[in-house]
Length: 326
Image (cartoon, rainbow, N blue to C red; front, top):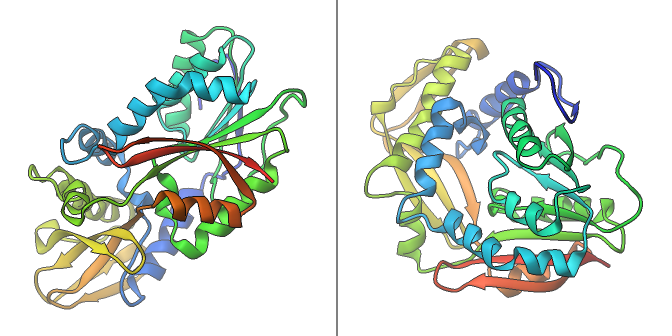
């Protein structure tokens, strides 16, 4: 971050974090069977623009459903928690969390947005301190999938950890337990977790949400190839791949995939790597788990989290869960 800031900022990631993580994931993912990489790399400037478009698509109700639930129940969250500190994981633009901030009362509220993007933290932080002059904001640039080390926060009063957007769905089942236990470990008995989760719906609806009629999601998926061409001096041809969306019923998740249209050899010069694709071979670029109410409650209980309140939108198939440590 540059310029004058009216708030605290801690950066736990070195300058090479992104490049090092990208190289490791792409090398490991494209030399495995099946090929599979993290969704992190979609989000250059163009990828972020495309995702904003996706959130407004009629086939993709997730973002709007969560926003609607927060509009209806942010006051309930505030009443039940009484939180005076709020930590948001994967905060991004902090658009939806503003509803919770306003319900909690921004004057004197300690707000810690956590994100890997310095630009997102800078832009959101500047806007928040302008909108809420009394807020006490400390931005934390960190990878929240690693053990969370928070900046100093007041000991008095409950804390609220917010993890919205059904981002938990980016973790496969074996990884979700350790992640949730990690959150539980930083929570005190009086603290709360607010979790957004996308629910299982009819298969055709879930597939359409990740393969819309306008082709925006397909462009978003293929944008990964442009990112790799730019960042790793690769020679992917986006026209040589088709975007597909598949429901994996065994793991209860949607998979976005890039399907090779022909046999091809792709060179990734920064990795000194040549990757062979067979015709019809599919590369998993994102996994997004979908939950059931009972299943998520069980996962949280196994991690030491007690569900205190559920709010759901049955039409859009989305829920918010408020939980405490036990």
